[in-house]
Length: 156
Image (cartoon, rainbow, N blue to C red; front, side, top):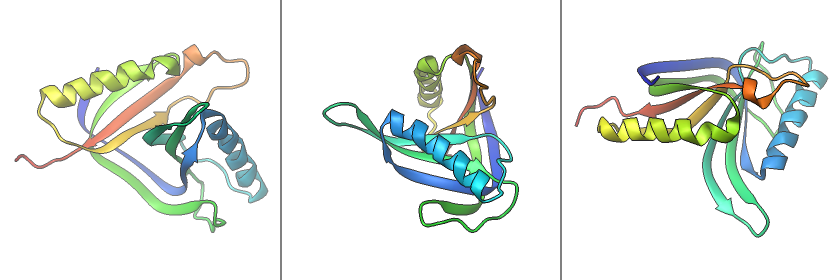
């Protein structure tokens, strides 16, 4: 079910944006976990990802991706990571995706079709909020991802 005029806000956010393969993204999740542990920081909310562009390379796609991790406190981060006091997405079109992330494209298609039919103007990429952190042994079919796309609030 698609909802409108939704907002999503997290504070004390570690941000990493770079071009990576899918395998490198998974490795960065591990690196961020180690970084938090080494710096006595704790994740304080859902992991958020956004893909800004996809480039085809010889072997596999390269994704221009941002990873956002809310922290339990403000932090001084090394040059690899940026600190954002607040990440606040407002006036977004929203849908919840339940199940394997391989079918997440269906949810994107639904949202984009809704945006198009209603004559809305998207002003952000899709932000994926991982509602459930999968534990080892849990099936990818148990995933729940909230998807937000910010739209222009102006009526033109």
